[in-house]
Amino acid sequence: PPEARLQQALQQLAYVQQENQNFKVENQRLQEMVSQGAQNARQAQAADRVRAEFQEQLNARRREMEEKDQLFRQLEAKLQAKEKELKAAHEEASRRKRDAEQLGQAAAKGEEASKAFESRWSQ
Image (cartoon, rainbow, N blue to C red; front, side):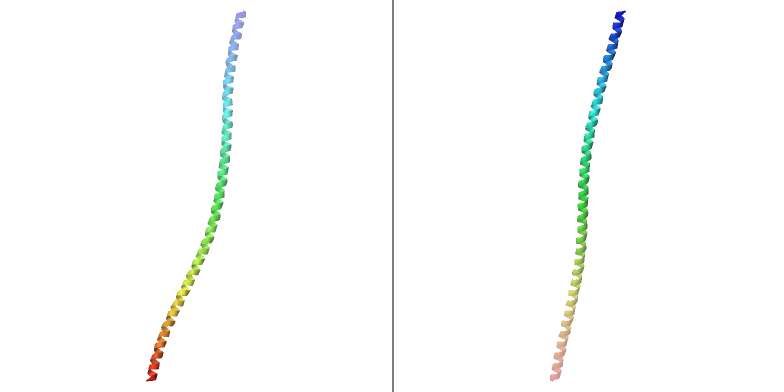
């Protein structure tokens, strides 16, 4: 009977419409996932760029610190050499001062002996 076929066609149409609606919902969900994935990829790329830039800055700072450390070590070595040189000069000056004092004392004793000799000689 035509009514039964019409009823069957209407049921098939409703089924196809429901499947079509399900497909649209699934398609929308997949498009959102693709969009979210693309956004995540852009964020990851931006994060990678920032990370690479930070790493580059860190490497530059490390090289700068290594250069400063090397310069510091050179200056420290020069300072130690100067300190050693100053210590040796100070020791030499102290030795010369002691020698001069000893010579002064010997001269004073010699002068006393000379005066004593002269006073005995003149008697």
